[in-house]
Image (cartoon, rainbow, N blue to C red; front, side, top):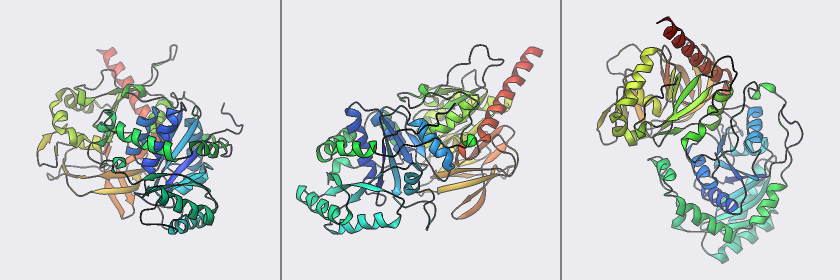
Length: 499
């Protein structure tokens, strides 16, 4: 039974005036600085991004979570935040783009501001003050006045030219805006975060960004009043779990909350409970440097729908686990490891055998690319892939798609009934082509800012598309995928008994 008493959750949002203001650097530095003090710091990221949560997990040792107010309902978001922060001493929520930037031009939908309101969190605004003096106060004052429901409680200024520059903008902001400037960062090339889309997560996993994290933490610990920030976080109002019972399925056990993610195996769910009438269906999840784009709660929702998750690494030469009743291949950077994947016949042959046997197979973005017949990398080299989807994937220099998507099922499939919808996000540099004109059944009608188009591919129990969907946007979807895996297991068991 969920605790309906007010819940104390020390927290704050780190927001920027715009992309590039330095909010990620400030977030990572503060997380590491507080973790150094022995605090359990829980990271959150506003919006659909996968990269920043990987940073958070690296600096805190705890799985970071996405909070998205467009892909999920308000009640789900509030419940998820409370549940995920339950064991933490401090929650730090990193914003997306600028504080008020979201899906719509004149509303807060999908913005950092909306999530600050939904979680009733104080906001620490990061302002880039290069070539600015008193004008910095005008910037902060405008952000304060645009939306009265948003409580900007403190400011951290970034890229100051000197200590005297910091003192100047601090005095100007505090006099005009009535809120404290609690710290600063200097202009420092050592704080530059690497390019985000070319194999960055493997570098995080190898610890190559540790010097950057430590450097940011050191500078912020030196130039920021950490105690004042902790007091601000501790003064955040108590929250209550939302009353809607449908916000998150309740009938299945929850996975461990807030645990560290030192390796992919941590995502493996508990083994079947002794005494159950039938064992849980097993979903094999590809997880390594090539396949690592998964929303933490997507995996949790599958567990809560009754699945047991087992991870495997195609880059390590592993194939489909023999106990698998279904396969989930997420996105990532398969193009960076195309030759390794193409050489893993154990993996590719296993995918082909699973598809031929009718095993449920769900793939998105990078996983979708692997199911195609070939993948042409940026250098023009062609790599043979699984050949389950009758198409070829080609990487290009220009981004092919970016943005939120609402997808509508064109017919019944693994996740949806015809006409049902899921919400998600699309971001990729590759294009999928079917030059032979072979039969193709689209999975979705995908709607984005630029209009609608058919997207993805389905055939029997195979479903693949570019869109990274959020299962919480249509809660029955997780249950349907798990049920399909359960039915496959029963069919296989019956077949073996009849032989």
